[in-house]
Length: 79
Length: 474
Picture 1 (tube, rainbow over the protein chains, first blue to last red):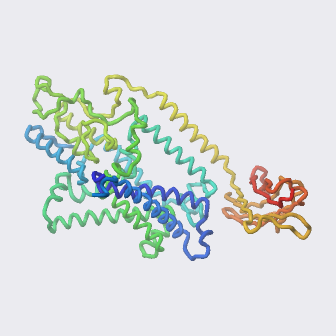
Picture 2 (picture 1 turned 45 degrees about the vertical axis):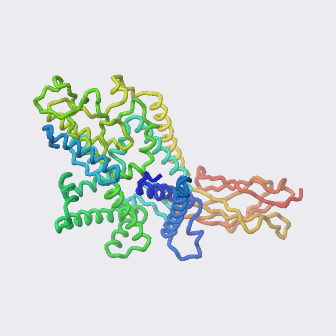
Picture 3 (picture 1 turned 120 degrees about the horizontal axis):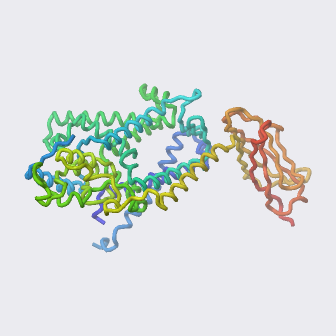
């Protein structure tokens, strides 16, 4: 576990969630126009897509980070 | 042009250096790829010039008074040359991605990782960054010396110059990227005058940072840790796949020697162990260890080794594009079941995509049931459902639409006007009421069909299904 370099660990959290966020944003915004969903807020369309993307990215990153955290071998916890 | 050291002491020293470098690179230390010239380096330079050229020029091109390629998110329309894609055309994006994946499988099975070596954006931008680095810091040796040297005014000046050029180039790359989503001319003008909105500005710097980080700092780490393709390449490779390979039967036993030495008498192969193939490698591997997932198939080692072979007076191709079958003394079969199957699926998908795009109707309709009530009874005692009909006109001309409905006997369609005009490229929301005598309803939920027709164009017709809900008294 400790043999995984930090760079690889960070990439393993940030990168798959980035890709997933891209796919999720495309799928979500094809089905729903963000401008319709947030019609009450005075936010530009481009900003809405951006918020959408980063929301998905942070969700994915949280999931990846949790996965990475729980991959720690059980035996090392009591030490 | 690489200079070779043929004297024994020099070569073993280099070998030690190379081994040390491999250890260091395992600990994520910087790799200094040595400059290389030759046929494949020329291919790569051509790839870089064409691909980067396209990337930076395309957003500036105009067509029919608009930007030729623009992914207009606020308008929800993608302009690609003379075509306009709407969210309803999502299927074509999916098709395009499937074709791209199949194309990659096909090319990889045939020719190995040529994508990585010549066309991958990571390779292309890294090459550009390496070129800048060489112009500023000098050759591989000079770069290594500079990095080892103590801090000095000269070192800071050189490093600052390099990063300034890198960052400027990255930011311009960011501007260009945003130019695919926001009109380029306006964007560039606003960028110079600091008038861009926060979102545009954010993306310019975000993309710029990604470029700077990936091409300037991470480089081969991207291929090693971020690229899924590198990891599943073995699925696509077979014994006839072209790959960069060291010819062991010819090269071994390796060893340094004087140019005048009779190698067969000395029991040596063609490899003089000069380690130049290792020095030029952008991912820092030794190709003589065989096929490795780190190898991006850039063929820098081929160019470098050919140069050395020329200088030694040996035949070229000690490291060359080859296949496992050839290296084992057999023959390569280009036509093989895997190639045929990949090829046929690829051709079928491309043909399918072209056919369906050519058959694409420029009109469209979305039927949305009113969510507030399932149904209601009119004063005449009829059952009524309310729908919002979105009428799309993706054509280059305005259209008059007529709408009709069927599926239940004696359906009545109530709307404000008989014909609706929808201008080119616009969407009109039309509320309609559909009424029917409850006697005609056989069940609670009934299928009805809306038919949209552009007046004067019999072939422009769209049919959409919808549900008509009624009471449950039967």
